[in-house]
Length: 309
Image 1 (cartoon, rainbow, N blue to C red):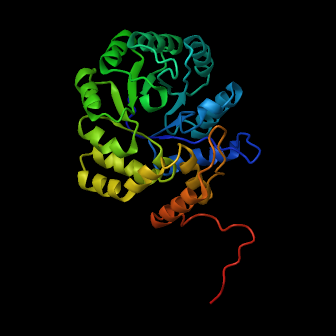
Image 2: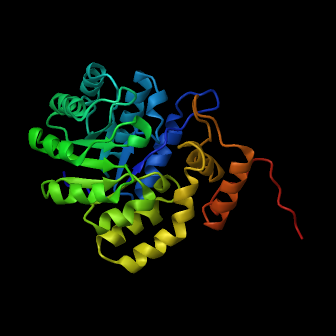
Image 3: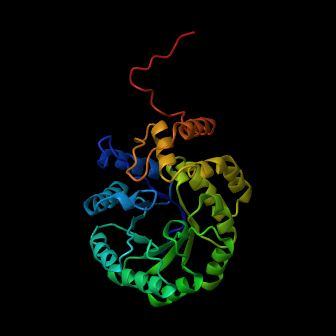
């Protein structure tokens, strides 16, 4: 896998009636690419994949691939806690022309052992081969950690398992991956606020939530770090550190969708069991977005008339 840099875990826009907003998704893809993002991840956690039905999930991935039109790599999220279902769905995902890789998180709820996770991801890799696979370690959502020694086993057992999105929040674990995995294996931070630290110890980039809202700046931050331009990277991190935190003031992706709606990019609709942020959180998000300059290009609401002084 040659991909490095900043990838956006892109949101899935919904209309007021809860249906998939295909034009908005295409517009988001174009804006992301025009802003300089390095790759896109469709239907991950931030894309609310867990609430999409199978037809919608495949349609959303296909739209992102079509809209990207080869300009950047597109990865498709494919996660399930039943290995049999995962394998079936992965077979469907593999049939999307132009898809660059598959991203799959730990099986949730079942709390499998390391051996169970090994066999689960190995089955996925065999199904989608030769398509590259990025395993996604996110114990905060799945209740299980994917240990570094298991990742090393997977890299040796399946040549198309070529990357990991590491969202354990544990820098020593990321360092162990850097030291243990083959040199070509890519390690991406799954946490915006740990991206520079992960790159500093040998990581290859970030799969980001905040780049939904500030793609040009977050991509520039990651590119600067990879280029050893640490003064620029740290300055950008200092500027956006509050946004990295704010996106998790309530359950992701409710805050990021709220900011995107304030920016005029999409609605703030999420699917149950997620709900929009409270009025107090929304006010805090709007204030922060304004301070960061994210609202300067937001369209004027219909019927608004500026006062003349």
